[in-house]
Image (cartoon, rainbow, N blue to C red; front, top):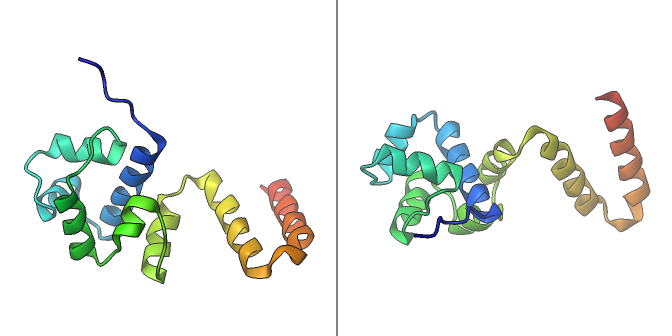
Length: 126
């Protein structure tokens, strides 16, 4: 039997689910129970991107934690709560880059040089 390939998307979804869990101060066991999973190992592998949930379980997450399917599956943020969870799910070195991307979107392309120079100053300071 061929081993399932773990994709970047699987890891990202798992990371967002883990962030939802930690933001709500739940253990992996309690999170698994809340979404209707009996196997802790299966849930742990979901967070690692090794297992995928059924659509019903994704819906349980959305209903239980008041997040959208767009956020869980695609990382599309629709409100401040989802943004906090999304930002927490990023690796530390990706947080600065994501912040800079947000700044570029907010400022528009005419301020690219200013934002990029801020980013360069930050990199020198770290």
